[in-house]
Image (tube, rainbow, N blue to C red; front, top):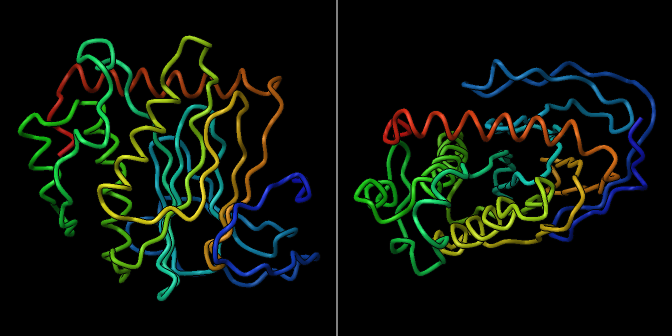
Length: 255
């Protein structure tokens, strides 16, 4: 059972509804097209259906659902259009291979000028294909654009999107820069795309368990004990290795 009192609610403009008890289970709300493969389950404590967003995945909803994940060095971004109530979450990590071969990690000034994010393609992608950004940053931008584009397809407005960000812990060893690079990337991306960040909980040396209450825009973050890190580290290392291998095999196929 999740201890709700152990979670920290990141500030924002979500309403502070109380969690209720019981198991008056309603019918599972319809899923948006493209997310039929995501398994949802009922959480009695929160009186809502929930979906787990695993590494490399994202999810978008127009209903009162919980979006959940567990993070180490990965980043999760929760985006929401407060007017339509459309919200989404992703879970990604930047491949590490190009950090060792392409020099220092780019900063905000390395990004192209603000892109017009349209469904299907953007000028940011075109600039990256011209070699402006590192391959690792291409993957991060792809992960973000996939989430944004699916929100736009569902009826959200990019001008109204608001972000909450968490993750990027230093859990892959004290010499690893993965978490810090993930944080630097997402800050630069959101600044470039002019998406306001309502709250951020990043860095540190502990894993995080995250619950996003999509309808309310509330992000609950619980720091996990270091003792629970081993399984998460194996999962993230396996995920990152698969990304590195796919990048080495075909570095342009993401687009």
